[in-house]
Figure 1: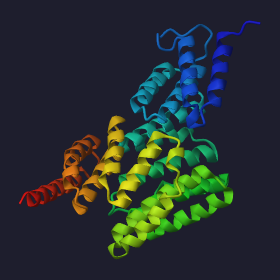
Figure 2 (figure 1 turned 30 degrees about the vertical axis):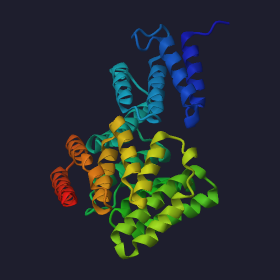
Figure 3 (figure 1 turned 45 degrees about the vertical axis):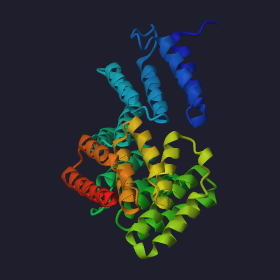
Figure 4 (figure 1 turned 90 degrees about the horizontal axis):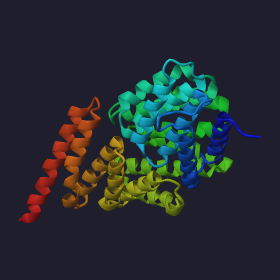
Length: 355
């Protein structure tokens, strides 16, 4: 019996879904996406007869999700624009509309375009039906709100609402919120952030969830580093704790390139070595991840100034300045003043070294 075009596309969608969960399946996932797009004529563009537009929209979103693993943000945005063209004027399933706006918020967030990311979460909200989708939306919104705060600001944000939704779903979801609450608190109250990380750690170990335990360990390393900055008299103690936790992470088993780069970034910070942070920054420059470029550039400047690596840090003054201007967040003027001060300090150090 000959399959219809719709049945063939639905078979592709089912197979793609089987290869959408593990990073090691990315190659197969991409090939199935390529074959499905070619079969239905999505890129000509002349879609075969009998293909339902809802299935086409689902295929596009699956393609976008796959691009997250390779940090292909521009490819993701291009596909979301294609989604909008096909969906225009049509009745689209609520779950697809939620996924479209939630994914858009995530893409903008990963690129450091925080205002656009936040706006997209509000576009997703009307379609967030049920505890799980509300949890996803509020968790992402809370992360974006936390990223928009500077170290002098603090407010209870959407993460508190996400925690309520997570409690309705189970402990695995609660762990995720604890990790993100810890990050938010660590910006100003590092010890409070650490208490949330310990709560998350206890749940992770009891549940035996390796993925969440890995996220928790990386977050603990970052919090110990934050504590070392806030309590310089105890710097060695906190950095030793950070190193012990990082030693528990198997670098070679980290699933995605961005996981490996974040590991290098943390390693450079706690060992006062700009080289691993520079490597991470170059990766983020390659995928135009604005927030990460600014964060790494800042770490390079701080480490370079304080630990006799000013010459290596100097090029990252301009990289930081240009990226901050491109990101253009509400604290841009203060950020540019900070960068200028760092540049002046570096040139002062280099002048002294010449004498």
